Length: 313
Image (tube, rainbow, N blue to C red; front, side):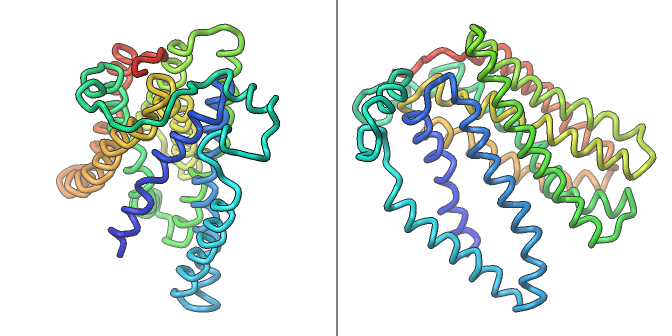
């Protein structure tokens, strides 16, 4: 059942990117994507906060009934209010449509996907490789953080659970800060390529820096703060690689995110398993070294191969 749930959730991010590429002008792209993704972060916070209460009062099945019911309500609203493109929305004024379509491609929907052409482009591989490197560190931190808090910082499991909410909150806040900075730079005349490289470099080198500082920290408070800063700077990736799918191929934004996110999910699978193996043989310092190395690889690949120009028409 978890696998079937994953199949359903797997289409969410490609679909979001596809719709945003049609609805959002380029000057507002980073902010809009950051806002949408921060909804996922805040959803995680809400789930972590309310699930224990529901379980305590009504038993564990209540969690699934409650969140499943919310999904059903959302689906009904989505079906009645959402439209694939501005042209299809009868409630939009002509001025709104002109504003939105002024910065977007007005071509026919994609009927066939040119896989060979897509995979022949270096910026596409920059997305795939960078997404893998990015998610390796992100998934390890989010999956193994309670264990780290418990084993290294000596927090009990209840305290660890509460502290695991902090990264999601910092990611939600910093994603929107990064989106505002990125769109401001674009408005001021910086090229999209430059903006994407700056934001993603922060999204890679920020977490790498804070993870290297953990070996020198001796107090739990500073360690938690360091983890939060790591995840906060990680959220600048929403204005880097996550926005770049819409830049290089607006008509194929969903396909491109599907490709890169597949690599990202594989990083989560392999990274989580590799962390367990490393901890059996080594230490947390070794775990963080691997993540830092991949962050650096991602930074190099991104700055060498990525572009903000449209390469797929």
